[in-house]
Amino acid sequence: LFKWAKEDDRIATNPALELSRVKNTTEGFHTWTAEEVAQFEECHPIGSKGRLALGLMLYTGLRKSDAVLLGRQHVKDGWISKRQYKNRNRHPVQIQIPVLAPLAEILAASPAGTLNFLVTQWGRPFSIKGFGNWFRDRCDEAGLPQCSSHGLRKAGATLAAEQGATTQQLMAIFGWKNVAETEVYTKKAEQRGWLVRA
Image (cartoon, rainbow, N blue to C red; front, side, top):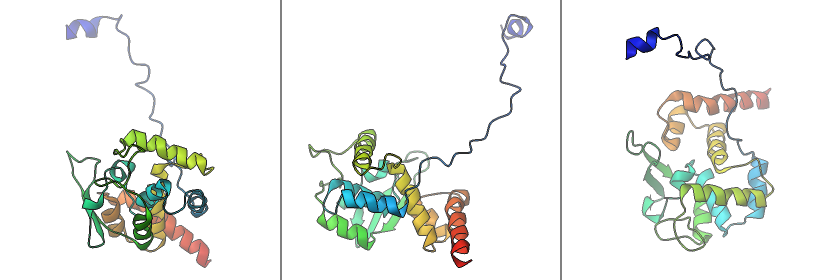
């Protein structure tokens, strides 16, 4: 059968075989600015579920898939310890993150579920997709259609790098396994530092 297929000139060839691969030049999801965070906070004050969601992602660097699963059982002695949801079966990564003061303040003032800090209006855990849609609505309410939950993770990494976090510290906080992922943020931070000093 294979020999027949090779010899039959009616078999179509792939016209894309000779084309070179186009590199993706986009930086992906929009990274929140400090002004955008402040705008969201003004719309969603401490004590609201929107502010709780923002705090959990911004001050921990968690993806939305981890933020929706995070609960009080993951917090002990001022530290969050949790296995990342992404690659949990093939390459599990256990992260340990300090509960920063702004997040501690938000947690103390926010209504939260028992095993999940973030719950729906019916008191049930969010699905990952459901949370993404819900948070999208909170961003729209704040007049931030360009912002998303993933962009908060990027903002957290940028902020940490600008405040002097090392490559190894960024890898530990965000659960990255290679240096290339951290260099995106450390190089931006270094560039901004030179611009400020210049």
